Image (cartoon, rainbow, N blue to C red; front, side):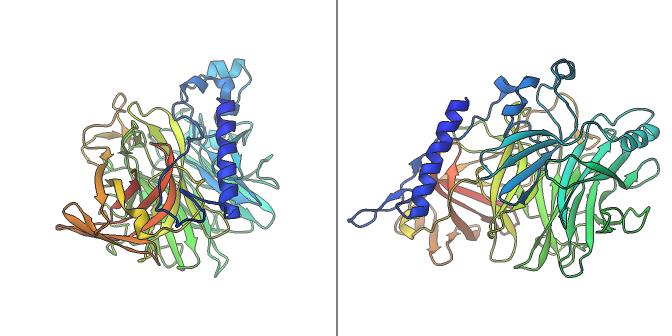
Length: 507
């Protein structure tokens, strides 16, 4: 496995180097003759999706893209650091204890290219005692067996790591913060940011912190299906609540929490558009988990959706960016949510999230998708879980050929949930819960079956005109076809209902 991964990495390095030198453009070799249209190039995947062979506790150093759950990532210098919930397939605490492997204390990874990840270890040596004491005092001695949903942010030369500790199925929770002068620790505990328990409406889990560059104020967004998502101001000097005891104000909720889960806020600021984007996750994490997005002019809201609706209303909001899906030649993915947004410092954005390999939906793989912004200012993400393809532009002739297309629509809402999650034993997807692909052919004459198409080469935007609905301004870009193991052309965008449309050229 290691030799295969090393060979794949070497091949990718050579291809990327040739691209950078202008010798090779993805899919086109230049010669004295007239360049030919783009042809997909076979390129091996850097790793396998199924990691059951690496699921023993002592294999943790090989979990570079495996056992990733609730990731948060930040580029520090020339290195990306990722922190995530310590959720592990086939976890065996007895085996881990016997072999000296710590469990439950925030997984840490690092990478220089968002493709190859080194497993660093665990952030903390134990679950912070004040968090354990609070949860146990509110939950009859139950819970506080793990640390969930970390988030990292820098302040001057200090790294702050936010985290939460909870009792499953209760809003008995604690968000704390630790500091270090290194992204790899060691971390010093700085105290409680907010905690919830009996009698509170909200749930103190899933922290995300954003700075307002205009005012210098810090804001933390957090929460779950218990009462919705909340926003509170922090003191930048301490990283703690600006007003001790404050729990913030409501920013998002759904109508029926017996079947409609809501959690995992992540907020980013786009300076070019001067907007704050709030990414949230709907539904149960093992099956129909999906990402939504809304925006605001200020970090504390109000946030509105695709149709201008305030998301603290009880309507299910769009755009919907990811949901369970399956392209041909692959079993597909479920649980495609709880995201963290990444900025590379050079104007490119990426979304990291977990994906659960279907059909069992137990294995948790890291997905990293390049993110773009539409003409109307909405973020959309790549149909593929890979961030290693260099950017390039395409001509109309390059687009001519056969494509697989997926429309990410609203998953069915007919499951009964327990604590915001599916009932035990119902982890497989049901019929209609996984978006499937169809094929279309973009012909040279501008036809596409019963539809037609045109391409704005200057803006790299594809328009498809059909009898029932026109889908305009689909963003064209180079990418890796994971299912067919080749470099190809991809598109992403939104339809008129605020649902994502994905496509990849296969022939």
